[in-house]
Length: 204
Picture 1 (cartoon, rainbow, N blue to C red):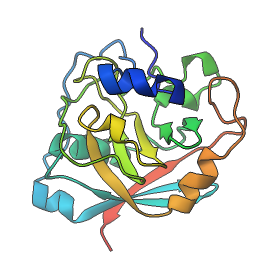
Picture 2 (picture 1 turned 90 degrees about the vertical axis):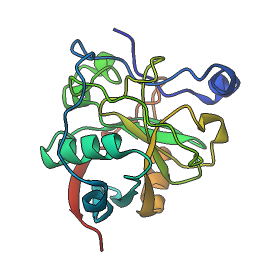
Picture 3 (picture 1 turned 180 degrees about the vertical axis):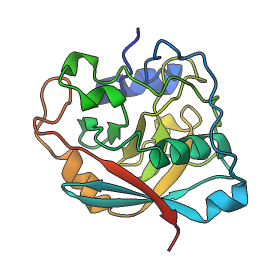
């Protein structure tokens, strides 16, 4: 099983040229996502709130650009899939990554390798990876995104067209900044658990 790792700053040049990626497949990774039967208009009326001990991060979705990824995220969140998972990889000046169900357990060697048991085909768009953009992590297979996602804390144009953008932060970037500044080990895992709980609600 390939480990799902977001690129470090040292791999930026390689990523820009090769487009390699982030997320490992689960054992059932070839199963395609069914997801909720939400229309684009219905998804436009929703937003997500990621609750952490450091504060809340509110997301606005991009259902027109990535309808299947938004459906997937909404469905997983409503099922409580993300609750208790960690932001398990944080890189200052780059991004925070989370959404791996393996992070609910104590075996840190598995962090970054988990998923929901299905994948979502890529929905690349021309939305740039500006600060606050939320994209799906994946493996070298463009169609391998599952549940792991990342929030960029700094403009990262070298990711454009290589990862599926499905949302943006509308409130709480200061919380993402706090999380990305947490002390970490050599694998970019925060030394103290940064758990999340994700709620879907009507957009305010």
